[in-house]
Image (cartoon, rainbow, N blue to C red; front, side, top):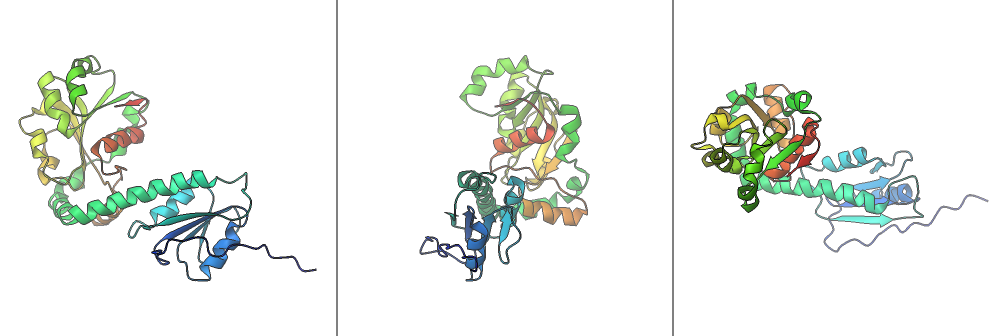
Length: 289
């Protein structure tokens, strides 16, 4: 007798406003590849099957975290608005669970939507300021330049707020013992207290010159800036200037213009997140905010 083809629910419950061309179906379980194959043949454009089996026409078939994240990163220009997770067949113990895959996929897509919203609101300003800063960016250093000297050192992140005013005296005792990384809007408070930041980070394309106004250049050593900050920030004094891209499209565009890679820092739209990510790039441990 011919082998019986497993029965698979070909149409998982999709929202009524589902977009077959844009939205994403993630299929897990022993029958994930078969379900993906059948849905792809019926016009669904974005299907991710979690399997260690062979390829499926019209779908991605992956099972490792880095590959699954890479698939989602490929949606940067038009992230899915809806994602459906469908379990088809019995769970496969050797493969990541649906809940685990959901954490990976949702994490990437959330960041892509934040980046897309930022580009929509500030894209023109971002591009204009990046072009105006091109001479400085051509000579700026990548974040990874600090990995060797900072790897393994503790990092303390400094942000403004009531807790900073209460504990700023403790920071003086940490100078030279940890890497002090301050977001730019904490710089005035540090300068008043006589604390020297090892790195000052600024991300916002809006005008952050007031964060540096009146602050002596000896109050910080390294400036780490997103490509699209106000051009004047790329010219502030400092022992070292680092430039990074907070979104992949921006990095790719400028990297092509400069004919060299521009390193990306994952920010989630937050300068504090950017400072923490820089600590990861540098291999600092522990990282405390």
